[in-house]
Amino acid sequence: MTSSLLARALLLPVGFICAYCLAALLGAMIPAGAAMTPATVRSHQVFLVAGPIHYDFLLPLDAQARAQFQFLIPSGLPVSHPDARWLVIGWGAQGFYTTTNYRDLTPATLLKAAFGDRSVLRAEVLGALNTVPELPSLNFDAVEYQAFLSAIAESFEKPESPPVQSLKVPGFTLEDRFYAAKGRFHLFRTCNTWVSRMIRASGHRFGIWTPLPYSVRLSHWLYADTARSAPTPLPET
Image (cartoon, rainbow, N blue to C red; front, side, top):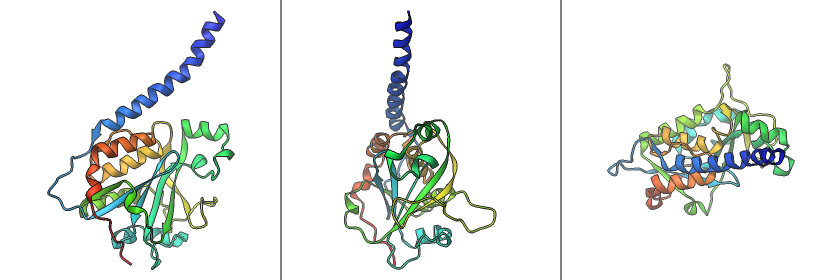
């Protein structure tokens, strides 16, 4: 009897993981948001950058994006620098995301991320890149693009008295910054579900729940495949 109970107890987490992964697959396949209108001219292109466990957005720092994210300039993020061409931005759990080396993660940090932690945004400005066309992308018309940028900007937790300041934690590079974000991170509201929420906020159709990287990849393949034929944008100086 004891061995049978032990076996069942060991099977519970395995069963949960399998169910979670299956739900992540189905959530990517179930669409939410409006279908794309073929006649609309979509001249704005945004890219998806895959990390080990999540996706970031790579935004062209055109005039529209520079204007939208100018509130980050006082924190030291050089959005308006003449050589700035791209903005990398992603969302995640504060304890997990701000740990620069995964070997330094503790069980307590992992449990907190799974069951509920404060969220942060990571932002970094980059110069010219050569490999951008090889990345998966999304196309927006002017209205969709503004809605998309606004949704990302609204993800920042802004103080009652500006300016927005970055968190006093080390970044992944010398140039990136972490910022307090809205909402809590947990197993059912992950960095990858934030990606799909931002995409759907633009009016695009995307998977209703994309907690894992393969969820984002599948949903992109199903609902954003037209992005492959779009021209690469040239950010304005």
